[in-house]
Image 1 (cartoon, one colour):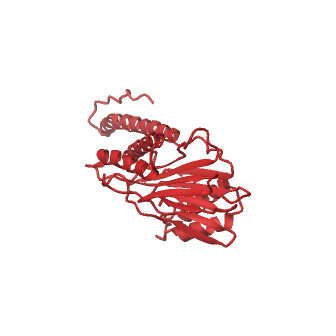
Image 2 (cartoon, rainbow, N blue to C red; image 1 turned 60 degrees about the vertical axis):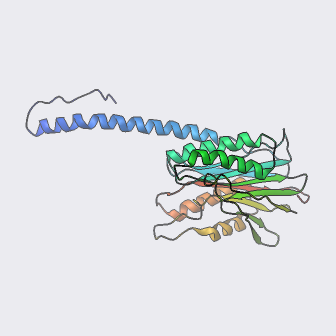
Image 3 (spheres, helix red, strand yellow; image 1 turned 180 degrees about the horizontal axis):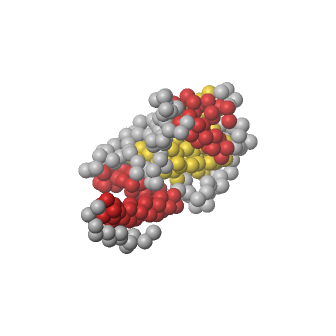
Length: 285
């Protein structure tokens, strides 16, 4: 661990050559260690940006996780506060920055900060996302980076869920009673591409007990195994169907375990984020 040590061998034989090679190697080892320590600190800081726990919302069972393929990543999830101490409303944001690593992590932190700040201010949901997009586009104009976001607002008292899909893959809504999946789609481009993009708010009512909302990032269904086969969205649907009777936290864990098992030792190529919300209310939401 003492990187000031040098061999200091002056001879011109093999030992001297070995000593000079060693002396040239030590500074590179020291630099690599500093980089590793910096990445570890960045990982610690980024992990602290993710919610320490899920919100306590009456009638909802909530679980979430983010698993990065590098020390840092571009995925995130958050539960922005809607209203003051409201135990009957849940805000959900799942984001995916193009690429991964340090640059994606920086943009992820920026997008999360913009979203949190803007949601705390008055305004329609479409205006909120439009304002976040305008701010991000200023930062990403010359970089080619962008962020996809799926934002949802569940209001238990109003029995309503509203969402905006900003370039993100549709969420899934599963009803175990009739064994049907519904894709929660909608129009809207990714954030950071065009300041003038319009975003539409979609809504749905009549969610019943036991229904499961699944919001994820493409690191799940685009995972490949050693044979080049893709995990796919159908496998994700099958897992949710089979595990629908379990708590949300167990569903999240089982999905992640199945993705890891599918890779069978292959390197994780992309970040993985998954949010599961399960209705537990005895009345229609």
